[in-house]
Image (tube, rainbow, N blue to C red; front, top):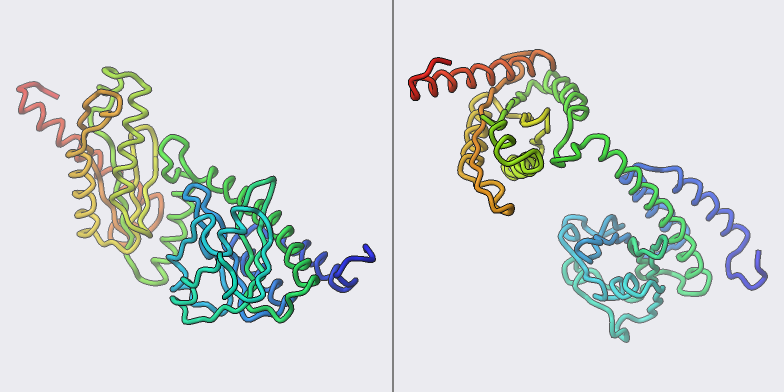
Length: 343
């Protein structure tokens, strides 16, 4: 240890244990909780917060905070450069403010929302590979000296490695359960999720509905406009379906131009209303306008509900698929009668 270092041998041992704990944890929720626990143990203060940067929006959001109401902070966003945290994130330099009343950067927005009084702050950037991931704020700390600042910086360095590891892990996990073309969930996630939802439904005696959907006459779109535009149309239809759903409902890219919509808590009647809504949205939307083409589509669908129609995953999917096939056959026959041809 450097003789000029403000950190004691005990501090360094604590940081070593911290690094082992943080870098071994890949679950984001447990990781963020652990970070704040470790910070609070090493740096006694009235409040600690971890803010992470949304790079696309250029804004900091409160990921986790001690002793501040998470409901109040849920919608708070700080622009890069806004407040002390925004300045630290922007410049990637730690800031120690002994009296916020004398700081030109201090913003009291969070204090006003939470009825909290900030007097002093240690704020350090969480950076990795030259990129800002977020900041750690220690508010009204007992110690504002060199030791506290050195500890905060060291904790931020370990936090950066842990957050980056968790982000990469989550990215890989997302790739494994999402469809590359549409961004919807894939069949791997469907089978895994449905199994869990059905077991939950058995225990809680709750309904679960599926909508199996298939684009009508989609091969004509590909034949007329090509495979690339066919893929673009599927992407745009997927976006229409996704916009029609609220959590915990979700959509799955099943195969080609087929989709499955999973509706936890929906009985048969509500599921049919949702299917009609999605069908209406797709039918009223003009696709491929961005390619100078006008394509209108509609879907056939089949609905199955647990536990009325089936009691297991395979039977539920099978029932919805049969209902879909029946609707497509009915439409084919109707089209044949309309055109006077035999199908």
